[in-house]
Amino acid sequence: MRNRGLHTAALISIGIFLCSVSAHTQGTAGNSANVESRFIIDQPTAGLLHDHTVGLDVDCFQDGGMLLGLSVGFFDRLMFGISYGGNGLIGSGHTDWNPLPGMALKVRVLDESYFFPALALGFDSQGKDGYLHSADRYTIKSPGFYIAVSKNYEAYGYLSFHGGINYSLEQADGDKDPNIYGGIEKTIGPIASVLAEYNLGWNDSNHDARGRGRGYLNTGIAISAWNGVTLKFFLKDLLRNQQDVSIGNRVFSMDFVTQL
Image 1 (tube, rainbow, N blue to C red):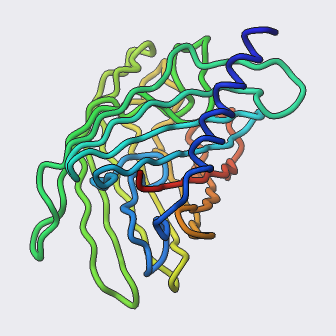
Image 2 (image 1 turned 180 degrees about the horizontal axis):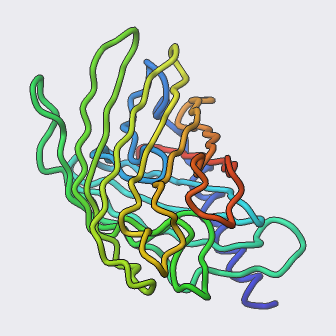
Image 3 (image 1 turned 30 degrees about the vertical axis):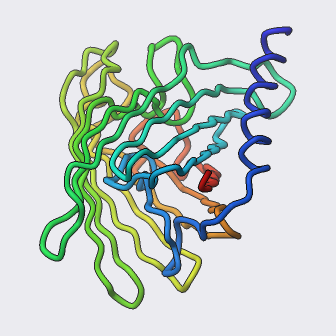
């Protein structure tokens, strides 16, 4: 009980600290966004935080789960992040903490140009949704090592395409295949965007894995509610790739970005 209280207090303290800092950015959604999207939904883009910029990500998922992530941008080329959370943080049941914090590092190799997309290399050990101790993995495997590309076009606002290839280190199920993913983001007015993502799930489709070979199809909407804060609502695994996850798994997410 004491450890649970300490873990919860640490997460709350991080949130209070960041939310107490005055925000100077509009958000990541809509035509007026001036912060790059760092994820499509679950998978990374080539976007990152600018120099001296800090981001707080909060994901709320099934079984009262919550994940907090803290990211910092350096030199407009480098981003470092750490995250931690668990199941049962919301509600009155038992809290099941993730075994280790997630660590992330992303480097922008090429900036976007008229003809070519932005390209980034990175590593991220943080999976999505709850940690499955019996399977020694997250419900959605972490990206691991990845290469991500992103390209934006003006089309009644902005139309963005993202994609990448990744190699997760979560291989207790024996599936060591590399993976491919892609996604699209379309702005709707000054403060909203709709998103869709398809993760082929090649690294989660063998006999002992949880996936059934259909891949993960996710969709959602993001709204820049006020300066620096973007609220997101996602429907995940629409193809019901995992048998024991209900179709249209609902996830609420928020990111807060500010300059120091």
